[in-house]
Amino acid sequence: MTRTMLVGADRALLNETADFLRKAGNRAMVVADFGRAEKEFSRFRPEMIVVSLDDPEANGWKFMFQHGFNGAAEVIATTANGDASQELKLLRLGAQDYIRLPVSPEVLFARITSRARPVDKKSEQIAEHSLEVPCKRGRLVMDKSRFQSFWLERELSLTKKEFDLLNALARHYGLVKSREQLIETIYEYGHQDGINDRNIDSHIKRVRNKLRKLDPLFDGIETIYGIGYKLNLDRTRRTKHSAQPFQNTQPFGYPSRKGESRLVPVSQLVMQTA
Image (cartoon, rainbow, N blue to C red; front, side):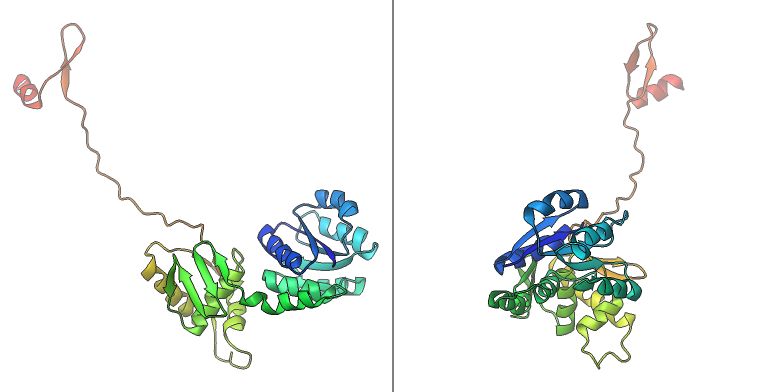
């Protein structure tokens, strides 16, 4: 059993990864900010820390040096903005792994357990079978082991590439997947020649159309222009209301001798003013 502390702002990713760790018989703690992580470190005494480097005040670096490189805990760094030079620097400093985001909880779990020592049989079994567990995102269910997908409890009829594409977006829920990443996901290595962004756009269009056949208001696949796509089932489609012509329903009237308003029919008003 190992104790792992996961520190970062992506609560969905870290919480799901922590669940996998606990199911494998390990202890795991998720902390959103580094101030609390500092307070919890001495109490929890983690053997492994998974640290986000995307904090604008560089608190992730400080935390790694204090408790990882200069401490007793092993370090796995995660980032959405890193490059090869940063990766090389961290590995030379002693980081166990360097993971570029986005990444699925299953992959992050596998990377943690492969670096942690000792790795027990239960952890290996969880790592092998985690990708077969149906992925549920709201009313969307993706069951890769049975090659079935459901929206609003109604089955979707998808091709293999359409299924793999939607499954990738679901397992990285809320994270942007670039078109290049989606190409690598749904096309096997060695079969990517001649494949470009338009192929991904066509697959996305067909998946959207099939979902809208079941649910005309579906708008959960969001286009991030210039980058790619992400799944966001919280989006609501706004209906455009045409402007209604102004209708004056105020009754006509004219002032009485005492200064009070007396309402009269329009026909009488016209006759009186003629």
